[in-house]
Image (cartoon, rainbow, N blue to C red):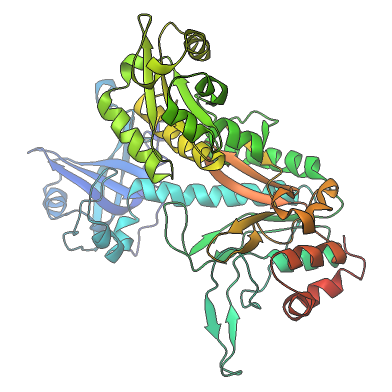
Length: 525
């Protein structure tokens, strides 16, 4: 590259640069030979610029004809404005082209095993094998750049508010959390292992006890758990901890953080404050603790309507917990095939089945034939229309609600009820501290064991653990859990009582968490 110095990226030239001599360096994205003229699209991480080779320089044309996809090149030339009819509005540089005066091939490339295009479909195993090629894809590259921008925005926002970025250890003591640990053998202590952190949970509590007051980091968290669309063995999270705060302080801080990050990274203005639902409300209305609020279609409790019906089968099922329904005015849009699919969704989610019926032109069909006229009127009121369809699950309450929550999402997608480009945040609060593990026959932490129970629920710790609510909150966006937090427990007696509920007696608690319990006795905040 002697004698050539990159002057611009491939994504920044505009008509303001017309007439300037520039040098671009990057990869050959595409070559088009139009007989007398050759066009090359040169690509780097910032974008694509069109370079034109004209016949008045035959040596340069001959060199350009040798170029193949993914060759690495340097091009010197003059910026020309494209004619108005040739402007490409899809490119940042679409109003100009570079008329080449010099070309150097910096490195040749074999034919790639797949086409490097935005929407190119390639076998996933092949993409992973050639990850360095896959990452040249514009969409993947923009995701990585946006991730960097988001991290910078997080640091900017928190630094301005007096937070300290503090790194915590990666080789840690194993403690029981939500998933299995990755273990690392110790060379100096044969037979003993470090764990890789599932989160900086204990360390940030120690930092608060130490008086650091406002902490954050962007830690790597590692969990040995089954893969899902939203679960990976390794992830990075925004980890924040504060002393001397209540829930309102946390909500205000995080809402401001989301507003800042969204505006900085994707230019979207986020409305605050975010709505709030308790865990119980979210389950009752949406059948999940991660509700998508971009559309309505709330779950209705129709237990009283079923009780008045002539369907003995439905009444028997409802007697085990209740009857719940999704009611919509889109009766004519819901086909028999769609209902069969929704029934399969409900069964997979644990329901015994999915009853259904329509009201149209004053007549009821399906299960609704067994409902009273008064009940049919109430269903039409729920639909706010002269026709309706009701999808009904009856049985044990929690299982029925969760099944309808899954049906709700499938139905919304099928009916195209989910608007694009909307961001609907919601706080879910007052989670249960414990959940019952049927396989192990014991109580386990619903989130983690270090969250503070509500003061008014402390008396239930020993008598009815399932009713103990925690000062725990999740932030949900469009049906996806973005984050989780809580007011931390910093009182030794309460922490030991929580540990006893999940089966850790005093000796076991001392063995595993003695360092933390002792720290609580030295002025924990």
